[in-house]
Image (cartoon, rainbow, N blue to C red; front, side, top):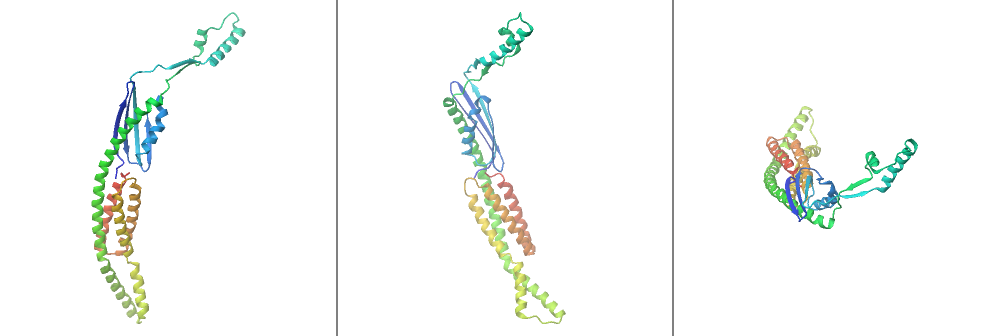
Length: 294
């Protein structure tokens, strides 16, 4: 189990290049990558993104890439002769029409525009640059993964502890279930007989038992208890696994909340209500913890 929060950093380099990559991750339902790196090396962004996705499944991850060129490379400079010719042609036309005695010169063109004078950053050599970036990223991923796993182990311990508490509470509810049903049936029989006596009418015994059984079924929470106990076992199993389990746990906790709410509404018993409140409290703590699980 891993949490979604963590930090990792890595540095790698050669005799001409030094690369440092820092990664910071926080909770996020899906994986969101924000990579900030020098414009000259943006060609490597997709490779970095692909490599990160192989390790991280969820979380908002900010990646900061710092590059130091130990041996700066001279920029590439060339002349756009087509643009230069267009500028000269325009000035020649002006001179011919307005100033026939003047001749178009290079300084005149340079005063007008320098768009024909092109400067580009040196081309990036992928064969030599990518291994440096990749090694720095590997170190950063190892760091952030180690932090996520350490926090995940603490969360796992807490989840298992709370799951044990829920197991105790739901077993206590199950133990009281039969007593509550018997008490409810007796109470219902008493009310029906009182109504029949008031109406001076003797009820049909089969119909009487059928009605009592039907209303007793409406407050019987056996199925909800069984499902909740099953969910507890599933919870323990999932918590013990690795990988992308956060969304599974989130869904399971929603189902457990639904079952315990139904038990609370059906039981109408003070002791059961106390257990239901305990379970709701534990489920809320679980839900908070699960929001940080990858």
